[in-house]
Amino acid sequence: MAPLRAAATAALLVILALVSKCGTIDVEIIYGFLNHSISLPLSKPTGVSEIVFKLNNHKVFEWENMETNYFGSFSQKLKYINGSVLIPRLQKEDTGTYTVDFIFSNGTIRKDRFFLKVLEPLAIPEAICIRNDSVVTLMCGLNNEGADITIEWKYHDTPVTPSDDFVLTNENKSLTISSPHSFSGVYTCIAKQPKDSSQSAPLLLSKCLETEGNGRNRYGLILSVLSLVAFTLFLLIEQKCKSKTEDRAPHQEYNKVLQENRGEMSAATAPTKSNNESEERASDLRNYCDESSQENQEELTVENPSTQSEPKNIDESAEKAVGS
Image (tube, rainbow, N blue to C red; front, side, top):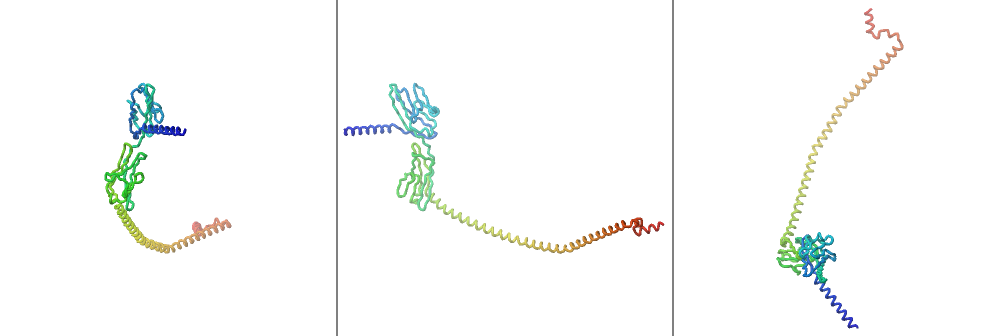
């Protein structure tokens, strides 16, 4: 029994291996690009009476008796024309496994499948240099991301391989050059993906080294200019403060003289003020005396009414005498 079980197990493993191998061989990978069109030929064999086209096991369309019936929104996304499936504008959701069932008149079925992967077209990479002490690191900047993208470097059109002079890291996006002065030529960064590639503008490493030196000189020049400007501003501010102090002295002297003149004028006008006060007091006294005299006279008149017919003063008596 044991030999039979071993033989059955071995046969089962062989069958599974063959199925896996056939499945792997049957699936073809097709690449398309975002927002681009693609035509997928179905290679319809002779004697086929019906075709069923699926995406991830979802029916896309059926063809039978020269008529095509689409399912769901696929009627707006693709067309089956002359034995090929045309997708005019690929989107990310179009990525997946497509299955084609060819049904013959005798009832037999042949299955074809392929995998469609929609990629973004590669942008132009940018190569930049970063200097750190005695070594230089080149960076390949790329806006795209994806497992199918690979990065390569070329030095004078020769592919760069890892060595003591060249160290590749970060999935080849970084290239460190240990002896930049010995390898100061032209470098190019190249991005690749299936059916697409893009390369950067050439980067001359000697220019990068000169830029680093010029940068240091430029920083020194900037510091010198800033120091000169600061010293000039200090002199101008000091001169301005000195001028303000000198201009303030004549004003102070003028204010001092003005205060002295005001004091003298106050002293000169003081007696006049006293005289005025004396005259006011004298006038008040005269008015008081007149009022008192008039009140006394009125009292005398009330006490002696007979005197009212007599002349009030000497002048009236004289006039009466002359008349008589």
